[in-house]
Length: 211
Image (cartoon, rainbow, N blue to C red):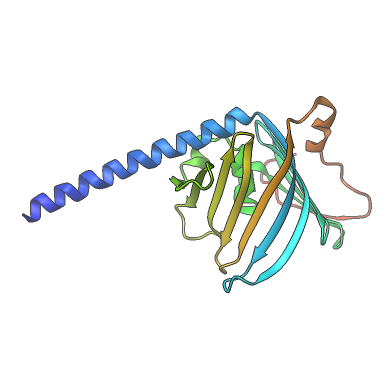
């Protein structure tokens, strides 16, 4: 009987792994079909007690491969730009720019995973489809490593593309983002993915590759 239970458990694990692999491929296929996206977003962050600790809004854009634009305009401005090779993080209040290799961007900003096509990076995450809400298709992304600031990322799709996504961090803070007014990135808007270093700012260059 013990052997039977062991075999059943092993088969269940293999089937579960196959389902997760299928879910990962389904998510990546959906993301690749987007090609590009620009939208307004609203943000709400709640703490472990479900108390709202921050609300905000801004503009979000992405394009394959490895490009995205994240401009939080309220309540405090901040800007994140991935230009295909580097990730730029600009804090106007602190007058500071941080730049790093895009390969390191997922840890700094897990949203980068939405435009990441590198196979080795995706292998570091479990992906499973969760119960859809109101006809949406939602996917739960969970890092395999425990040494990360983000516990889970959830991405949901409707007929128009990505409808919303959320992040849960180690402190129990839940950041939820809802997208609206979605369009493709036009030729004129491709400059969003080019970061121009402002004058009189401190630059923290964390890139490993030689420049």
